[in-house]
Image 1 (spheres, rainbow, N blue to C red):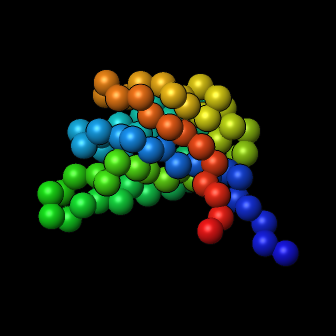
Image 2 (cartoon, rainbow, N blue to C red):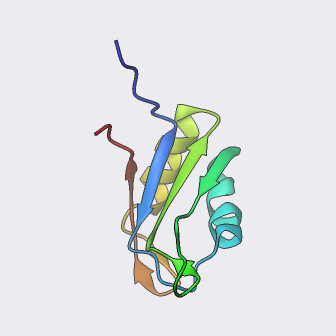
Length: 86
């Protein structure tokens, strides 16, 4: 049986100015972050508008979603949700 890592969230609709350091600083308020994965557009050296975070605990992931979903980051409204399996 496949278990869903409910500690992993995705942040969508990021502006091109946001970096991994920004994400770590803002989202570490909700708990210890294990991994920050921000895909980069190699042609322009900017993020692709999304970022994946893996927390150490599910409670931290849920707190981040509860506080940051539809919140603003760098002037843009962001979406924060659990990563769904494919």
